[in-house]
Length: 397
Image (tube, rainbow, N blue to C red; front, top):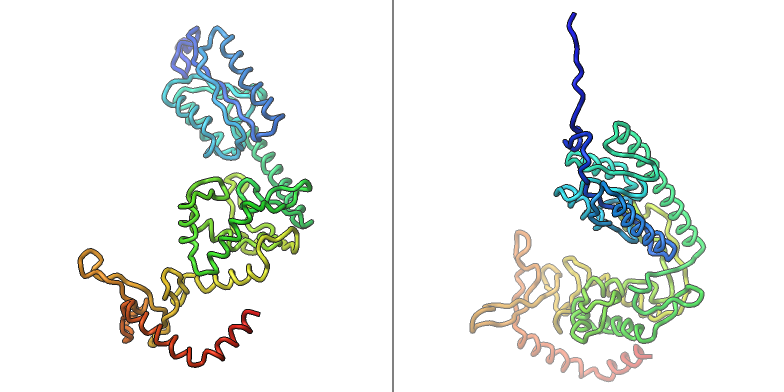
């Protein structure tokens, strides 16, 4: 009868080190808190101090560092710089063991958690979760980790739904709030509502005035940037999109539309413009207006006619949206001929002259010709100046 002799394993199948080896491992800690609240700050500092002392106090460990993320959610690893730096260092061979407080501190996303653990395991890096007493090199480690990660993800989903419910209840009750640090014209009042900041409100009124005078959002942004006026976020450079946002925000006329955007997925935190998927609430006369409602509505009408399209109105030049093509009905626009030589000149022609199968037969004009025609038209009108003056007076009143 054959005799079977068992040869015991002498090396760890995970680290390839001798089983009885006393070699020190390079160990790092990971600490994270999800908010910037003062009580969480204490927890954050305690975690860092604890892991630093714990690792340095062990004879079988060499301290690497305590990697940290402060005020960061664990539902995704995308924006967690400390976590990503730790994983990169581990994959580069600088870390043998990672110690953290619990599975929920590591990740609340089951897929992220398991993917990261498996990647670390492939590079012979172990993780230890103190609260659950899980070692990822243990045969039961991945099963326990899957269960605990799923529970952590479910807890995160429940918290997200509770927060969403609370926020929508505030909306339904007509409670208005804005990101005051990034909102021009208002400060937070004692009751939490919007109170006019007169210095910033002057900038808002000027933006509306410049737009009604014919300036484009881009031109307004350029002017404010050149004058050194800071954006709502405190930056130096204004953009056309920021100006458009101010020009279309109903809060400047004293009202508030609530729930303009909503969170699609609690894991990715992706937001989407609300196009009727969830309820919206419109609160009238919620706070003091910076812009009169009539002025605000006039701006909205101007915004509508200046939208991109065949007949959109422009405000680039003095004759923009003033000359219309007799063939297709589109506006004339300025074009530069011979831009790089001595024959350079600016002409005006139909913006859609060469669109489609047949080109418009209307001619082009240079600016001097247009100015001459304008003066001729004004002279004709002056023969009826009494009627024009009477009409102007009526409009003015």
